[in-house]
Length: 285
Image 1 (cartoon, helix red, strand yellow):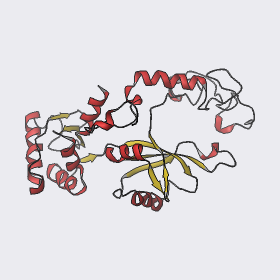
Image 2: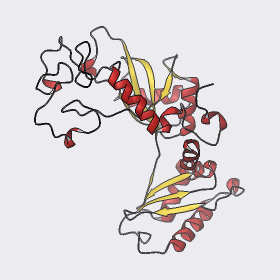
Image 3: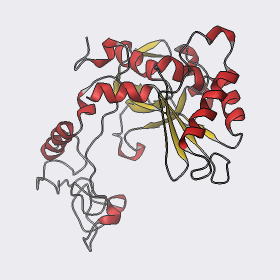
Image 4: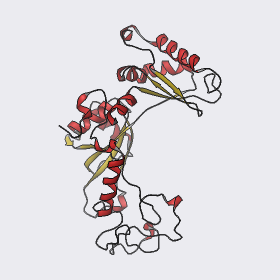
């Protein structure tokens, strides 16, 4: 089921329609909307792609104006999202509409700290070294805040979002190149969320009913960022004084991760499933 859902996602094109558009909800019937989309696609299609089945498989529009167009294959969806065709498609459909990119988040492991994810030139060089198109990377950041690094730390894990599922999957399978070093990559898994106020799992700080802050490092009654007792550790979720609440080796954190894996089967698949069979496996080859 997870693979089937992901394959459907790969066939989808996401579009935001402005409220004042002639295609906004309530201004056209569903049949008229489908006809408009189909006619637009046929109008912009060049002779090299006329053999593709360009008829939309399904069209869904929500009250917010957001629209999901499911094509007959992921190949057609990627064609519509390619740079030149995307602009023609949107201009012909509604110049004020926005085609939204679906992104795929991966973790690059043990990246030298000399790399700066906020430096556009370095991100561009990373794309070039791996033969990716410009702007394939939509965002990049260190997983752990720099303030939590150890004094002699030289490498850290970096998470990036890319706009192409094939690039994400090949990176997971083969790794990526950074300054002529091949680095391992894994799919970014969903993780349990821990309240930044009370440090317990299952809710966010804005929903917390606790009247006092709790430090994720020493468990004192203050914000974690204000802690001046960092040599003392105490984990609130498992009531242990041999590690912090944010320690990834925390037994309670591991248990919460296992529970989330059971609830969210996407977490159990190492790749982003597409129509290619090797991406649908439960474990890397």
